[in-house]
Image (cartoon, rainbow, N blue to C red; front, side):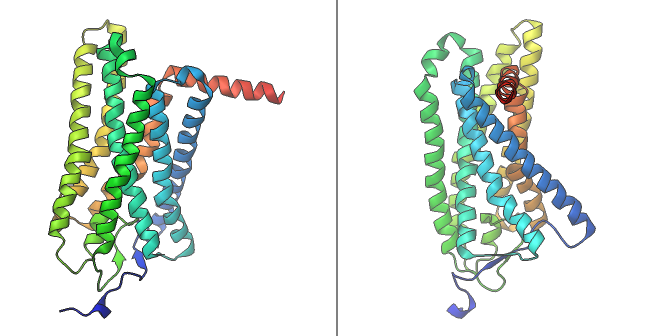
Length: 313
């Protein structure tokens, strides 16, 4: 039996990261840094606009504000560490730091999956059953949806973080990834993790397949309703639905492919490439697709900028 000296639960891990020492890495680093700043700015502005403009105090924008907050936390959980490692040349992360990354990442990934499903339901009711919208989507309904997304996401994350960090790690403690993610961590374990992986599949069904199916059905119903509208409204609604589904597929597709494959089929390069979509790119695209293409949001932004300009003068 392998001795305890071959692994510990308190040693630091090494994140091999996304960047190398080549000139190409400087371009990649600059791009990631730009995306990070852009994501924080967009989502913070989105939250501010929704809070300041009373016309946006609706269930849809309430859910959007929570999506923006999740996106800010998610990208802030990963990219600043990547930037610090690149600038300092140090790639170590403590056991506690790695555990925190896993916990917050799983909380936000799971919570966002449920929140996106809630948002698709809101759009389904608004377009397909507009007369029943005030009854089906009361003010407290969106509050319960948002709170439920956070609560269930946290519970799921506690369970998986506890299990993932409980496994003994031996030999190399180098994680071939740009953050501590469960599939990459499992590769370092020196015991059989197949039972735990089956639990990951169950969570994948609950947080990935079921919400994605609900979103797909909602948008199919929306499209059927849209086709019965007049040509002008139809074109606008089709454009909106198309963009929404593209972002949903960009988020759920790589996420499903990463978490619902057997460990033996994972390759580091592929996992890192897929993770970029649901950790970095979609938080950047969400406010653009869901909010800033909306004339009500653009009008609210203009009003805020105008009021700030007038107050200074």
